[in-house]
Each structure stands twice: as structure tokens, then as C-alpha cells.
Image (cartoon, rainbow, N blue to C red):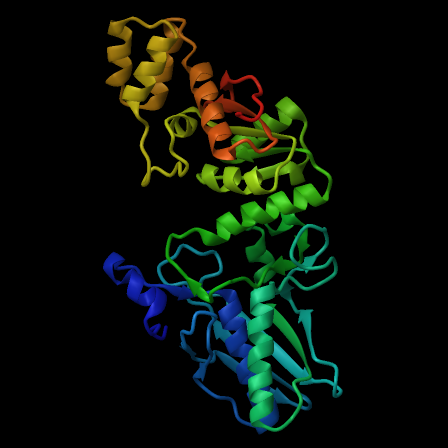
Length: 375
């Protein structure tokens, strides 16, 4: 992978983690190379592109093909040190010239999805090539066309080898993007462990649910909590948000794009972190605070001896079991505290919130009543 000049790369040097490139950046590089070959007869290799924040990385071509009226180039996505499911995927772009005045038209090739539901930043029926990658490709097509004194009229077909299979590990099927992956990226750069793609998927999930008329959504930490919410509330799949550890991302986006009701459901230990004020529930970024749990246990009637045992418990689950044995509703107390933290983040948005805490098997170990906006 080529080094980024300044920008994100410089910011990441102290982490020791290597940044990578989005599928949008790879598609832009492939489109630029293919269009250049179509107009000049030669593929630039490597091909250099300009990203939205001014970086100018160069990409080696993995495949190239020049035929009658069309050209294809491909770039292997390098996500750097980010655990990205599309790392190593081959992004191919085929271009062909269109009649003068046609502009740039995008098509979904094999492995790239098509939008089938409203609520996304693309119209139903459009290939899942997001707005910023589209803009990047249009700009690069125009620059190359100007250099060759011709019009920027091109059909761009974006494909990803094995993209339909890879997409099963993404939010795309739930969002109504069928047939493959989305071509993503707002900066062109993948920042390791920023989890920006996951957070963006949460936002798109809210958008799609609202567009479908859903008024009750659920932010779930995993598949077990999804099953619990469906059993409790009968919510359809497009009302379920795969929140993972990003409670804050759900709450902040719903604050700006409210629905009538939001249920948060997850494991007791994770939601005890939300109850204590953490919005990122990942074990590397927040820990179960047993002292906090001991304080809640006292509020629920625990004596000092039990509170001390809770404070010294090995895990959150162990603390829960101690309290359950003593008849202290620690699960409910955590759910209520988590609900109130969520209401505080929502900052008066017209959203009613409830919280369900579960154990590893999906059994409900705590729940709150629904609470309206804080005034």
C-alpha cells in the first residue's frame, strides 16, 4: 500500500497501526485507470488519485483488460490494519464511452448490491455506489477527459469478486441492499478500528426503518438480544439495529432522527457499562464497574456485606448472581440506570426508551419500564 502524504497517516503514526483504503477509493483508482486506457490505449500503473482531503495515494493494478469500446481495471482493497471484511477483495471497474451529453452513469456489476428499499442516500433501483465515491469517480473521469480533449460521458460498472458472499457478513441484506456489497467511503481512508463502517450502517439502519414507517426500533448488542426483542415486542427485522458496542452511535443518531420508541437490549455486563455512563461498550474501551454495581445493590436493599461481595466479584455476571440469590433486583436496577443514561443522551428528543438486560442464553434478567423524554 502506498504511503499517505500527511493527513490520516501522520495522525496514526503514534498508534503503530497502518491505515487503508475504502472500496470507494479503490473503485476510483480502477475507474481512472480504465478510463485512461480507453482514451489513450495505455493503463497507468500505478494509478494516482486525489482523495477528498487532498491525499494522493497510488494504487497498483491487479488486473487490466482493454477491449473493443471498453476497458476494465481492478485494484485489490488494502484495509491496512483494520479488521475489515472487504480486506483483500478485488474491486473491478469496467468503463465504456457513451454518447456526448450522457454524463456518467453507474451500474452494479457482479458482487455490488442494488438498493431495494427507501431511506438510503440512493434511490431505489440504483447500484449501491455511495454518493462520495460517485463524486470521486465523476471528478476523475472529468479530469482525464479534459486531458484528452473529450467529453466526460461514460458508463461505469463496479464489481467486487465474491462480493455477494462477503455481503452476507454485512448489514446490506437487512438494509435492503441486495446482490452484493456497497461501495463506501467519505474520505477514501480506512482508519484502523475507527469502526466507521459499522456506525454508518447503524445510521442507515435507522434511515431505512424510518422510511418504512417503523416507529419502534431496537438497538441490540448481538443476535441473542435480537431474538429476545423479537419475542418481547414482535419487531420486524428492519426495526432491529445491530448496535454491537456502539450504544452512543444509536442514541446520538436517534436523537437527531427520532422515533416514537427505542428499546435497548443486551447482555447484563455490557448494559451495566451504559448504566455507568459509558457509550462505547467494547471491553477494550470500557470495563464493568463493580463498585458502581455495589452502589446499585445498596439502593436495592443490599447490606454492606453483600455490597462488598458485589464490589469484589470477578465478573458482572457473578455480581448479578450474588444479588439474585439475596433477592436484590440488580438486573432491573441496571436496566433503569441504563435507560436513564440513554434518556440523558437523547436530550429531550421525543423518544420513549426501555432497556432489557439478558444473560448469555437470552433469558431476561432485568428490565426497565418505558421512560419518556427528560425535561
